[in-house]
Structure formats: C-alpha cells, structure tokens
Amino acid sequence: MVGLLSCGRPAPEPNAAYAWRMAEALAALGPRPGGSPEGRRTAEWLAAELRRQGLTPRLLEFEELTSDGPLRFCNVEARIPGRGPAVVVVGAHYDTKALEPGFVGVNDSCSGPAALLALARAAGRQAWPFELRLVFFDGEECRREYGPDDGLHGSRRYVEELREEGRLGDCRALILLDLVGDRDLSIAFPPDTDPELLQLALREARRRGWEREFTAGTEFVVDDQVPFLVRGVPVINFIDLDYGPGNAWWHSPEDTLDKLSLASLGKCVELALALLRELAARAPAPERAPEPTQRP
Image (cartoon, rainbow, N blue to C red; front, side, top):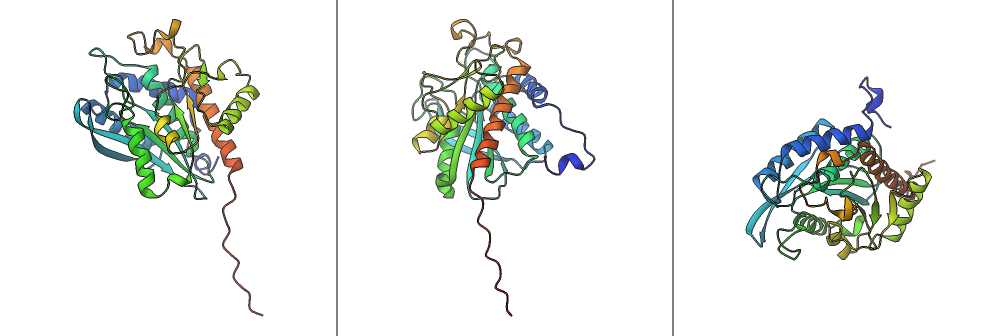
C-alpha cells in the first residue's frame, strides 16, 4: 500500500463489502439499456464514484448506427499511471439488457461494475509497472442478435481508440468482469482465454482453496473480450453462466439482489487483483536513463 493509508485517513472497507454496496447502489439506479439517457446518468454516477476514490475519470461519448438507429453511447475510463509503457485494461459493462419494462439485471450487470469499482479502489493505492486502465463499457448487450450494429459497442469502440492512440500494441491484457456475484459462484473461464492468464488465475484460485469456483470452461461466450481478442490482445473473462437451475436466472426477472453473495463478489475482486499483481511481477523493469558522464 502506498501513501493513502499513512496520511491519517481511515483504512478502506474490505473489498467485498464495498463491492456489495456498489451493487446495491447500481441496482437502485434502475434499467439502463445501452445508449439510453438512463445509461448516460449511470455513467455520470460511475464517474462520480471514481472521483470519490481520488481518480480522474473520463466520459468517452460516441455515436453509432445500430439496429435501432443512431444511439449515443458513453464509456467511462479511469487511468492509474504506471512506471512502464505497457497497458493493462480491466473492464466491465454497465448496461442492462433491454427486456420487459423495469428489468434490472443485478448479476448482469450490477456485479461486474461493482467489482470493478472495488478493484479500482484497491488498485489506486498501489504502484504498477504498467498503465492500468479501468473501463466501464456501454452497449455490451445486443437488442436482437450480436453483429456489427448490435452489441459490443463500447468495447469495440475502446479497442479502436487504443489503435488510434498508437497503444494497441502496448496492451498486454484485458481482464473482464461479468456475472461475478452469483451466491453459488461458478466462474468458467472461456476457451479463448489466454493460456498464461488462465494458468495464473487457476493457480491463484488453488492457493486460496477456490478450485470449485474457478475452472477452465468449455463454452465460448460473445462478450466484451471479443473485440480485444480479434486484435490480438490476451484476454480473460470472469463470467458465471451457471446462474440458477439451468442458467434460468440469467436475463430473467429472477436476476435479483437476493441471488448475489458478498463472498462471491469478494472472491472475484481478490482473484482479479492477484492476477494484476502476477502480471506486475512479470513485467519487464523500466529502462533507466543512462548515468551522466563524470568528468575527471
């Protein structure tokens, strides 16, 4: 820990408790389909929470033509500077599926952004050898069927912004947090997970006795990792698609706060942080400037 805990400020709440409070708060905000005014208000709420943590968020607005016509989306990004040129992105989508009026998916999608806020709160108190980017994606959910004009809007746009910055080649990993709150946690990392990231995550899970909750999965998932994956960025997706009997609670009115667990949120935040620390330990040391030549 650096700085903040030695300045007379109170110690932070445990990550799990904070993530739970954020999930409750996000659920209370109500439905927020991608590209909606409600989504924009949620983006502003996320930015305000990041500012309370001492970070400097940016609202990244963009317009895309969708299957429902032009919509204006808004990603939220906060950056934690690093000592080296590499970039690691940790992301979660905050939009909700546009189902029946009033639908709010609590596991999908309150748990992911809640966990990301908790991770941001912990990561902001540490020094990293890479630039850490915390990104809340808008427009992940499709309205009808995933395609170039339906779904994955925020992540697709963010990858393009990385390319425009000239930083896509510096992006060492995407850690994606999605459906991470199920009280009967069963994170199955999809088969397109980067092998090194997968082994690191499974090793850290075994060290904590969480072999049942975190496994190598066999089911491919269309999610915000796809735009990163097709551009060659190593990805790992924390996603639990065994949500209720036969996954029946997913995208249903049964996706409510009582189905979530503080412990599950905490485990996902802790494992994602452990993965970041492992990546940090493996990062090359930044080059030192040459020592000035001494004259006799």
